[in-house]
Amino acid sequence: EDIPSLAAAYAEYFPIGAAVEPFQTTGLKSELLKKHVNYLVAENVMKPDAIHPSEDKYNWENTDKIVEFAKINGMELRFHTLVWHTQVGNWFFTDAEGKPMVDETDPVKQEENKKLLLDRLDSHVRTIVSRYKDDIKSWDVVNEVIEPGDPEGMRASEWYKIAGPDFIETAFRAAREAGGPNIKLYINDYGTDNPAKRDHLYKLVKELMDKGVPIDGVGHQTHIDLYGPTVTSVIESMQMFSDLGLDNLVTELDMSIYAWDDHSDYGEEIPEEILQKQAERYHELFEAFKENKEILSGVVFWGIADDHTWLDSFPIERTNAPLLFDKQLHAKPAFWGVVDPS
Ligand code: XIL
Image 1 (cartoon, rainbow, N blue to C red):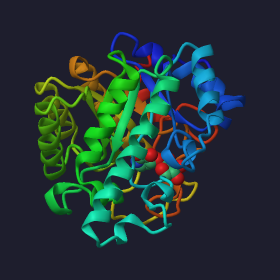
Image 2: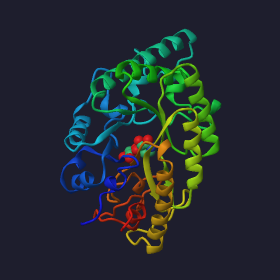
Image 3: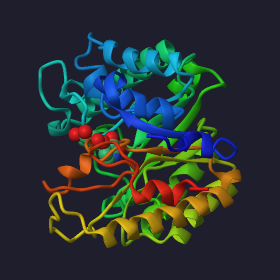
């Protein structure tokens, strides 16, 4: 297909990326990626359960495949994610007797568990960062630690229940020590435009910075839909973090064609007006990104074409179409919304 390259169209603004599985680095999909993106991240294989399935076992092969593909094609890389509350092995949170640490009631043992968990985390972070620090410059250190509905606005994950907020500091410090000053460390989350979420995130980030914890920026997942949030609120949140001296990255962009609480399914017949509306909204979003390139250092899509998207099974099973290319890998109206056809 004789169309402009997405990454080339944005060369003077910021890199454009995509999340991929290792199998997509060969075949037709890899050709689409090579043409249109200059930034890559793993959709799943860098997550804790995939890369570090048990205490003494690391799986490097799948991440290596993506790193190699990126290097051969001159693409930058991100790492997603050193810490998360899901897609993480239970072994992290299990004591030497095989008991779940969250069930511990003895305060002495609770302290021992906390120490053991933070030691495991420290070694997890150092091992992975040391291996990839020369190839991967941008790192999600923690993912989704804010939850406005939980006490203190901190997600009541196993990490938090066992170690309190200290796990965040431990992860950032270990990443900086192992990776040195040249890697960039991010706190990543969704819904960062939502005032409740944003304000808790802001408070946490400010506390970390005041304590001297090494943090470089905020990753805004940006899983949006046709109806919200407003582009203004997305940019406003970035401005707040930028004013703190932090970088912003759009880390997981996609645009569901359904409203969040709408559980309908268009099937394979997506109405033309929906695709047009998506194009207009993508256009508005990218115009704002371009205007704000000083506070935004990259835009990464969560996938590249509609044949492979997590939104086909989240929050329910149905046909979604959140990306710029369709299932046949052809440019959608949304593509022309972000790339000038002239
Ligand atoms: C998703 C992947 O796309 C799916 O393949 C997997 O089954 C679940 O995770 N926020 C994140 C990403 O930070 O890691 C998630 O990725 C999507 C939501």
